[in-house]
Image 1 (tube, each protein chain N blue to C red):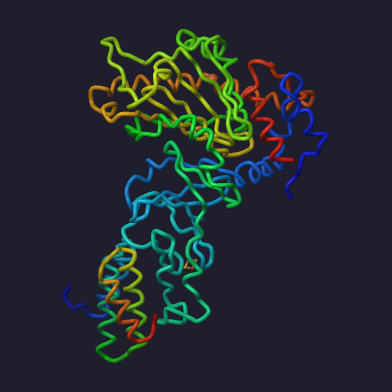
Image 2 (image 1 turned 135 degrees about the vertical axis):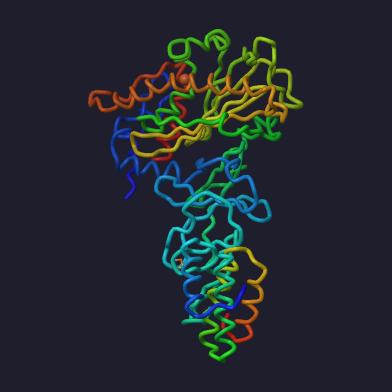
Length: 382
Length: 77
Ligand code: FES
Ligand SMILES: [Fe+2]
């Protein structure tokens, strides 16, 4: 059964940031709370599970597991991406075991029930006895694959397992509006623009660290030149996302002055601005005038998180040959930055085993985006 | 496809299953179905047409429509 936070437990986290305490240790080290958070924070809302670029062509399918739930993302013949439970309606067999193209129907490997790419059940061989493919008790129209509500934003595939959340466009209206100017097509160059980091930490610590700029001068001294602490501002949307922005972003350029092409039609303020938000629960986004990235936090275990990082450009020319070296430099730069964060999120995870830790004391100025995330967690668990 | 003896058909089916070659499986099962259809063993023919239909669906072959139609006419779908 799901646990709940009592009012008494909730109160210190819900206090204003100046007097609040962080979430208690058990949210980082207690397996039963990990499961409660799975249900309340991931399944009841919109969680990121993968990237649409990985199912590019009609007929492509990709199995994905989110916190034990077997899912499959399929791009239909109509070009629409759908997410289904990756199980046969007959005996619950896993349907698709490897990513790849589907030529015709999806055939269950067990008794060969066949499904269309839109989930419709097409054939039930021998279901009424050998050579008899129908039966009055088998209503094919009720036995299609179970579709999970899904939505693609900034190439990330989000799903709502419980089916109870408001539509994505409603739940995340503010984030969508905020970055409307970046709605144009995203261009991904393939393996040279993505990497995965396996981190020994609870997924929440990756969010908490990403939200704040307080650590930049200490953990990322290399960023200091173009990302000084005093040029940062907090971004806070209660119940949805938080993060930070900078007003002195400088484009990456090579020795000859080559840069990535700008996002078409971008307003002036973005010439030197960049923003970084954590969309609760598990997707971290960054946008700049010339590129963006998305980091999907995959909770592998209570103390293990896979960070899937993908970098996107905003104009097709960025994928051309003459930008290859610059793209490699950009990927390497971000990989360095995100690796610099590993020792702190792993260190905080180890720290959460200290029985004497009270959840921590926030900087009222620098930590409020992190506190906003704790507040969201606590409220969802109440 | 050339005519195969029953033993050769069996062997070809096993090969195609091992290779996961659904287009070939559809063709071979279709073959087997015709053979039984010719000897008026309708139950056996329907079994094999069902097999052929499944693999034709999986392979995305137009023949799936023909197999389905045969089964439909015999009230098997
Ligand atoms: S479990 Fe899928 S057909 Fe039986
Ligand atoms: Fe960082």
